[in-house]
Length: 170
Ligand SMILES: Cc1cc2nc3c(=O)[nH]c(=O)nc-3n(C[C@H](O)[C@H](O)[C@H](O)COP(=O)(O)O)c2cc1C
Image 1 (cartoon, rainbow, N blue to C red):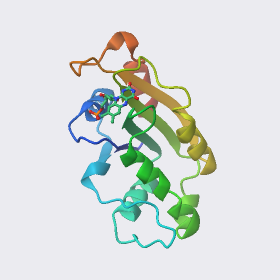
Image 2 (image 1 turned 90 degrees about the vertical axis):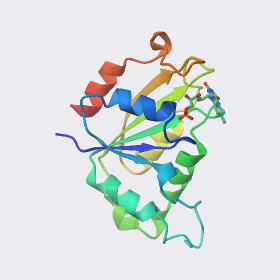
Image 3 (image 1 turned 30 degrees about the vertical axis):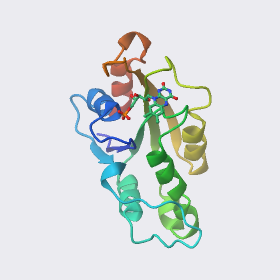
Image 4 (image 1 turned 180 degrees about the vertical axis):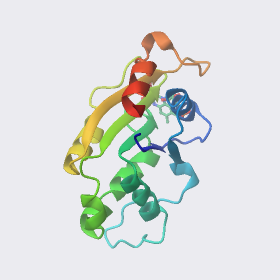
């Protein structure tokens, strides 16, 4: 059985990204971290924020074998919450190299959702794929969910949820 960790970065805790994660995890019980419930500082060249929650959350990544990042599309890119977390991955290359090396071979997935665009903007997956490559992890693809004006999933413009769920959880 895969140990799946889902890291959610959204500006609201019970919004469409959380809804997407619930929908995509139906029947399974992954560990879900909402970055909004944790204190993650911006990357700092002097590593002054070592007392925040980043190290503890990165250690959870080491215990998982599949890591799923979940984000809304905000202005054609990942959320600021998730980008802040991504920037802090640099700590794992500098002062926490041991942890950084242990990310090797983990599978990485992306759950993204938007409302105005009917598909992911071009280049959206690049930071996920390239960051995974940098840490010798394997990017295994995305599931894009399109939400309607009423915040309901528009299945006609969304990727296949069942296929993605199967890929992540089995
Ligand atoms: C600041 C901001 C920027 C947004 N930019 C986009 C965008 O570029 N493309 C898009 O399709 N939707 C965009 N949206 C809509 C959100 O992606 C969409 O409503 C999403 O489902 C919100 O997820 P959340 O409830 O987790 O924040 C934006 C919303 C906000 C608040």
